[in-house]
Image 1 (tube, rainbow, N blue to C red):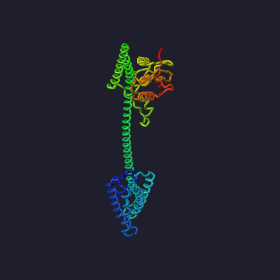
Image 2: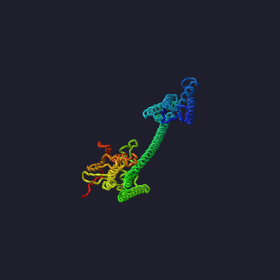
Image 3: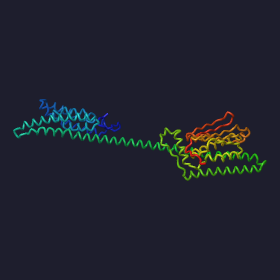
Image 4: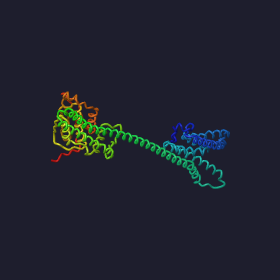
Length: 445
C-alpha cells in the first residue's frame, strides 16, 4: 500500500510501486538530479570534514538517490533530507520530499512534525552559514544584528513553506477527485440497481396484470357458460316432451350467451382503449413482495375498476340465474345491510359466483345454501352444497380448469381476508370467506 493516496492497479503497467511508466521515469530523473546535486555538494563537505573527495561524492550520490523512493516512503526521504541538512546538501531533495509528504495521506501531525524538523534544520544551518559569511566579510561592510535572523528565517521558510503548501493543495485536490469519482461510481451503481429493480417491478406488475385479467375472464365466462351448458342439457332432455319448456330454456341460453358476450366486450373494450388505470406497484424491496404486495396490488386493481364491477346488491339476480337453471338455492342475510368499498363488494360477489359455478360443474342438482353476514368491521360469506344426486352429477360433465378456488383465494388474500374451502362431513362442499370492511357506509333508511 502506498502513502500518497493513489490507487495502484496491477494492470497499470508501471514497475514496482509506480502506477505508470511515466511516473517511474519522472522519479528516476529527479533521483538523478538530486544525486548529482548532492555529489557536487559532497565534495565541499568532504573538504571541510577533512575526508577524501571520493567519500563525499559517494555519500552525496547515495543520499540524493533516495529521492526515487518519495512516492513509496516519503517519511524516509524527508528524514534523509533532514539528516544531510547540516552538510549543506540536498536542497532539491528537501523541497521535493516535503511536497511528496504533504501530498500523501499521512496524518497531519506527522507531516507537521517532519516539516518542523526540516524547517529547524534549515534555519540552524542558515544561521551558522550566515554568521560565518558575515565574519569573513566584517572588514568590507558592517552587518546589523537583525540581518542574520532575517536571512535565516526567510531562507528556511522559502525552502519548506512553498513545497509544503503546494503538496497539501495537490493532496487535497487528489482526494477530492477520488471522492467525486467514487461518488460518481456509486451513483452509477445505484442508478443501475434502480433500473434493474424498476424493470423487475414492471415485470412483476405485468405478471400481476395478466393474472388479474385471466381471473376476470374466468369469472365472467365460467359462470355464464356453466349455466348455458346446464340449460342446454335441460333443453335436450325436454325438447320432445315439453316444447314450451324447451323454448323457455332456449331463450334462457340465448340470454346467458348475450350477457357473457356483453361482459366480454366491455372488458376487451377497456383493455383496447387503455382507460383502465394500471396497477400501482408498491414501493417496497423486491424480496418483500409477498402477501403485502399482493394486497396493495389488489387494492390498486379495485380502485382502478371503481364502480364498474358487480356488487352484493346483485346477488339476488345471480341466485335467480342459478334457480332458473334448476338449482335449489337458499340465501340468508345476517346483520344490517351496509355498503362496502367497491373492491369488497366485487370480491364478495365473485366468491359467491365462482362457488355457484363450481356447484354447477361438480354437484349439479345439489341443494345449495348461501349465507351472508354483515359484522360491522367485516363481511363474511359462505356457499355450501349438499351431496349431489348421482345421476345429475354424472350427466353434466362440465370441464374444470382447476383455477376457480385458486382465483377466489387470491382475491380474498389480496384484501387481507381469510379464505377456507373443503368438503363437508355430509359429503358436500363448503366455501367460506371473510373480508375486512373498507370504506363502510351504512345505507340510508
